[in-house]
Length: 314
Image (cartoon, rainbow, N blue to C red; front, side, top):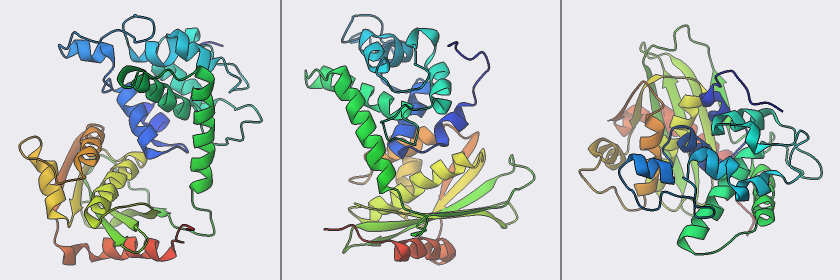
């Protein structure tokens, strides 16, 4: 097995596929050098804790997820039909390209990509080693990855529920500015929220729209923030590069445009950080407030998703 010699399309590798949004964000951080590994901290002038907690070598992305002895033990588990040999991949992106098409072995019972889930739990095991002094055995890391991938897949809506619909029209020039309106509808009794986003070209013609349902949302403000974050994920999956996001939640838009000058509303700090990181993937991006009355179509789309949702069993 040899590493690929072609330059991978990392956007398609990350933003497409069946995996959790938090894991897509982790993959994006890894490929963009945004993860706080020892090597990245060293580049930022933080000279302490730059080595691998397990073996003492410089902690790069490739070392942490591939070449460290701990990672090697994880990958040598029977995960793929064609065994993943970490030494065959000089960079993480090479391994990610392999993992995108790798066929899992039975009896894993995982139809979705297992590679990203394994990376997630390698990172979790690393953090637990550093911050909690807990050593997680490699086989436990593998088991958690497989179990979580199965659980996430089973939790996704079935075709008959139709909580997520996407209607897309191909537009001739993706470099033109796209306007995206996002909104959320929140139900207090079930802590469920419907998300909606509508994409328009510069003439105001709808070129794409999507909606979906999320559970365990604690407040309408968090729902608005998560709806906007999901709109960014959707825009990236559609390969939009120049975009203006509009939302009718003024406190959210203000927090996004204030950067570090003000403290974000309670409960939104992590979500706003995610949005900031995702924004770097666009060549041009902005966030603007829109009056609620002007966002009625997106509101109806979000409410339609919420109406189709089935409450979780008690």
